[in-house]
Image (cartoon, rainbow, N blue to C red; front, side, top):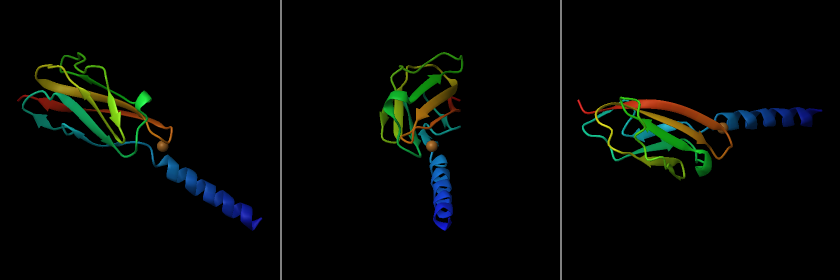
Length: 116
Ligand SMILES: [Cu+2]
């Protein structure tokens, strides 16, 4: 009886630890919310956990809402990046969707400013 109770507590602790280990955005280049003088050639995102390349993607839209990414996300460890076409000035939105190695998916988006 005592043993099985300890086992259940351990299981709950393990599950909780795993749930807190989803891949979340750690930082990005260009930085989230930052302003850059000219449109970057690529976007790079770093996550809190390693990513599964096949199911992790980035899309980027310019101020007019047009896709300006080249459509090919590159994944390496906890990092992924994508090249951009020139898309003019204004607010760029970066949308990310990742599958981390713990099989959980997370997604989010942020903007940065190009030009003045
Ligand atoms: Cu997770």
